[in-house]
Image (cartoon, rainbow, N blue to C red; front, side, top):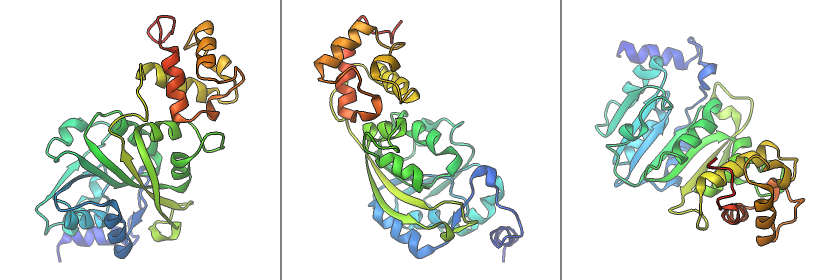
Length: 284
């Protein structure tokens, strides 16, 4: 048996501490992983970007189903186990590094478009990873990820609910989200403090409706959810001039007392389009 494998196996069995600062919670249930990969719809014609392959269990399943897999891992200590677990596959490229600091376009250059992103994302960097992917402009077909159930609830949340916020808006603006399954904490090693959920985020080809000024839209939404208990008239004072906003609210049939957390994605787009004028402050 290879010494690299033995070292990785000892780590798996607990003689080496998992790195909680990296959000390491590994899933070793091969049957469940196989089921999850099948649920993504990946075929032998598809390419996959995997973030945080860790022990290589998910990577192994992905390599069996996909044409090519690029796996990005920040922790050099798990690479021996990852490499041994996937040594029989020629369709895998392992990249050591923090995906937030790498050139993501260069990283994905070898993947056939449109490609999938499939991962068990470290809990502590979920939002930055989503923002990186959504803002990348890359030809991503679908993002299928294991995340905290609480975060999954936010992605799916409807307006006027406690879970609905900036993350909900961004997700539903860029994607069509769906929940595949909830995975109990005890399925992971070491078990996290909360349950997880595997979700599919099918990327939209276009926003839900035409957007006149995406930069203005995002500034308005961010300002509103930063001050989510304030009315739109108060929360957007630093983004859109008062008279412009007043007229826009009337145009889209919203009351001056409306709050951002009450608006759907399409209502937000309609409002920002109505505010799109030389009097908006977004370009000042």
